[in-house]
Amino acid sequence: MKVFVIGAGGNVGRLTIEQLKVAGQQVTAGVHRAEQADDLQQAGYQAEVFDLLSQPQEMAQQLKGYDAVVFAAGSGGKTGADMTILVDLDGAVKSMQAAENAGIARFIMVSALNAEDRTKWFAIKPYYAAKFYADEWLMHRTNLAYTILEPGALTFDPGTGKVSTSPSDDGSKSISRADVAAAIVASLNDPSSIGKVIPLVSGEQPIVEAIKNAK
Picture 1: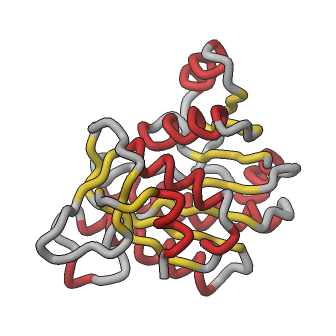
Picture 2 (picture 1 turned 180 degrees about the vertical axis):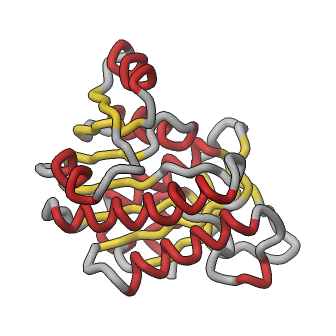
């Protein structure tokens, strides 16, 4: 599978391209800055600048020939509401439009836990709002074969290879970035994940099994 990872300069994106490469997939890292592309190329990855502020038609030219797109980019709610809207919402939607224009069917979206439930937006509300509307667009305004992954609070803990896709009120609300990356890889390899919105927190179920059994 030939995969384009948008946001590969970020922590989850970088782990994703590493795991995809180990899995034998042909992967290109889409990054925000030229120096990030240079660093990744020196590390042995195919990498190029992918500008989320450009137009969908321009993005589509870069995506032609790929089998799947992973959207792992994001402001994280830390760069101000303006950039959150331009990256996490409009950048995401333009990436979907570009994927469709490029003839790509498969699209993996990294969202946020409980993005669909406004009553649970505990902080960085512009970020959650951006994720909410981007996810809505993906589900209802595209024909993409999507999987939406909703990780909880991201940690730098080592990956465990295990998650829960059914968070409870008194259970974990966090997950390691490495396990999110593994869930992305598992989703790409599992057609049964298409059309699903999958919450992700740390847990006890092996990731491949958890993705396959997610409702």
